[in-house]
Length: 503
Picture 1 (tube, one colour):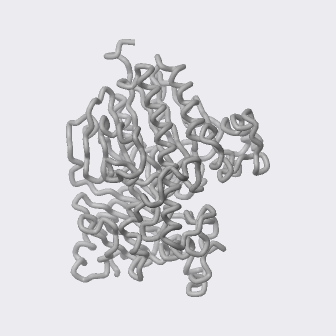
Picture 2 (cartoon, rainbow, N blue to C red; picture 1 turned 180 degrees about the vertical axis):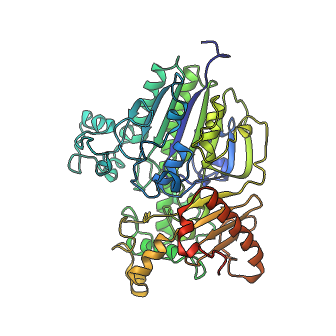
Picture 3 (spheres, rainbow, N blue to C red; picture 1 turned 30 degrees about the horizontal axis):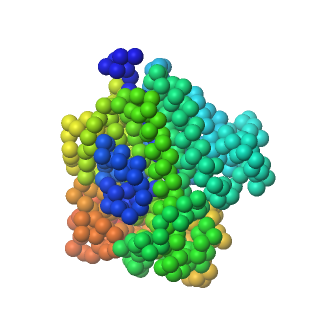
């Protein structure tokens, strides 16, 4: 097909739990990420990109639909995406594209194609309880059959557990498997326009993999805010999580000493490097097939990971390390990189991609297109505020379900009733991040947080309860409430938000 008339392809690569600070372009020159560091040089790099909610299912729902979690209903993990809520391929409709989703889905029927994706490659068999009514529970993922064909036996009944597959040799890892399946797809459909979404499970917990020793412990610095654990003027929820890690560790690792934390970070970096290798193989395939220039390539993640910041790990908090992610977009025929330093939200990704693909924004989308930034028509995000939300019992610690369940450390259980613990874990926080660097977390329990990210990027000084910031907090509250009203956020009905200025 004539390159000038060819529709652009879309290759959307997203990882699970990758913090923004894992790439050189975001300041980390120690972690070994050669392929993505090279990709950044020909991409539009968004320095301050934020998820809509820092946990898997809600964030993924926004990436694929352009809607806030409180709009599409995916406010907690393992919530199926409603059939009537459209994903990007469905918004395009009969556009002549070959479509596919490979990797973790976490929005319902894990191993059955849906929502406009005609090609489907699953890697996880752990979500059978969340399949739609009538879907056979005995079907297994393509990765399951790949492992069985190579002589591996499932360890967890009729499934391979994540903790076991994480310890398999690299050639049998999920990233290696996805890269090989992606190469098959790209080779077969090289002459057809395609929309292909690839989700790497890594560097999500369990924090083990074939490259645990790729980075030496002596080369692992602890985060600058490691020595600033959650203080008395920060949410009780964060303090509960920290104590849970001290008491229980994570993924079989103790988290009590600085050496313990360096071991965790080294393993996490190894998982990031593992993904980098196989993303590189996918990008090389585009080049080898002669379709790299015709392909819009997106690289991002569904949320970050604290990795020692404030002596926390995982996600489910509103700190930068959990809420901020890498976001790089290479436009069709883009040859040189661009750096965008203002805050942006992933809520804008769906309308942006629709415009880059030559389509109007769909009425379902609640964000706005940022295509002009990718096309180098603008270098500034303007004065747009970015918003985040939190709801649901997802803990991100060592146990999910009852928010005051057995994972809560004995020290905290002795001081707080189960009912109070539940209120703090479930607190529907709403966050605003402004173009001039202010971040305000509005709490229904009065656990407000105000940070100046310009001079306190580590969020160590909460200014919310200082009287000299009352006017600023009043203004930021007004902006949050206006956003809630415009998006019909049900949290406005929460009694704690009835008078959000009542601190």
